[in-house]
Length: 260
Image (tube, rainbow, N blue to C red):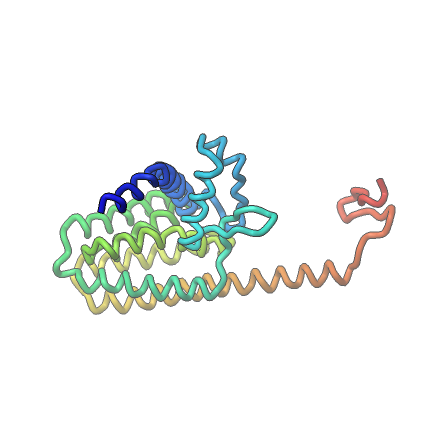
C-alpha cells in the first residue's frame, strides 16, 4: 500500500492547481449567471490572467471545468468563448428544470421554514429591481427564485444540480433581446406561484409551475428562431449585394479598403 500512497503524494502539485482553477471557474460562472459575460464573449487568456492575477495554466484548467459544464467552448485558432445555446439546449434545460422544481413543490408540506423564506426573499429582490427598472437584476432574482423553488425539497443534490444550471439559464435568457419583455410577465407569475406555495396549494402550484416553464421555454426558443432567421436574411443580403468595387462608398459615406 505504501507505493500507492507514494504515487498519490507525487501529485500534490495538481491539487494546488486544481483548487486555483476551481476558484477561477467559480468566479467566471458567477459572472455568467449575473449576466456580465454574455454568450459569444471571447475569454482572452491575457486579459483574464491580468484581471485575476492567475497563470495561463490555471485559466486553461478553469476553462476545461466550465466546458464540462457546457458554459464555454474552445474554437480552434480562435480561443475560448462563452457558449451560445441552441433550441435543443433550451429544451433539455427546461426538462431538467421541471423535474427539479416539481420535486420542490411536491415536498412543500415537509419544507423547512427557511426554504420558504428564501422563496419570498428572492421575489422581494425581483420586485425591488423592477421598481427601478433594473431588468438584468430582475433576471438574476428570477434565477434565485426558481433555485429556491427546487430548494424546498431540502435535497443537497438537487441544490447542487440547480446551482450548476443557473449559468446555463442565464445564457438562455440572453436569446431574448429585451430583458423587460422576458421578465415582466414572468415576475407576475412568480408572484402567483409564491401565493399558491405559501397557501399550501400543492396541486395548483404544480399546474402553474408546469405551464410557466413550458411558456418560458417557448418564448426563448421562438426568440432563437427569429434571431437565426434574421441572421440568415442578413447573410443572404450580403451575398446578393456582392463585394464593393474599388473606390465605392459605404452607406455611411466611408471609403472601402479598395479606395484607400
